[in-house]
Length: 171
Image (cartoon, rainbow, N blue to C red; front, side):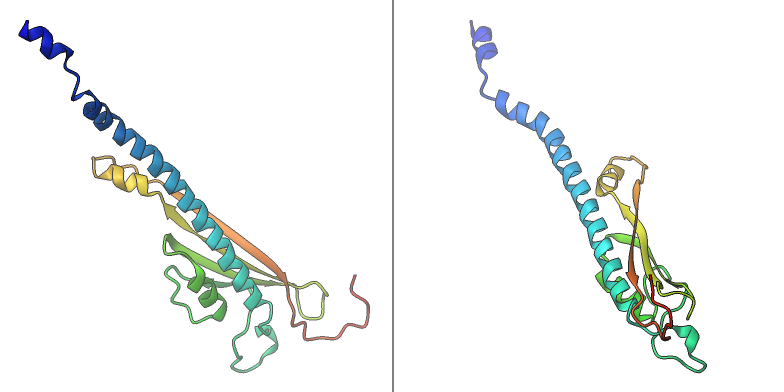
């Protein structure tokens, strides 16, 4: 009779069920959080490229200076990983990049030649890697799969300082 009472006692069932379901629920929530963080990182990277291209569009063209020029733009300028460059374009992009973007590379390019066209353009490209945090957590249990997401964003702007006057109308 005592044995039958122990089988019908279900007081610990809820705690066992919640302890079995909780890791899967937390993993599902963490995956959604991790993808959201990656999306936000790519959004901040795009904003960094936009702000840097705004700075680049108003800098003078380095090719028109014969001596030590002020901060200017030429094609291309590449900021090394970690952003230690003294270039104002690279500094502007680096100051706005999120800390989660690793191995950041910034390239500023001025297209067109002086006097050849009315439509000179400035392009700033920013790229880097985002490491998913879930794979770092999985490394704690012995998984050796390190997944990264390559994020690459660019922005274009019309070059504002066209140092020549045009006799023909620009079309």
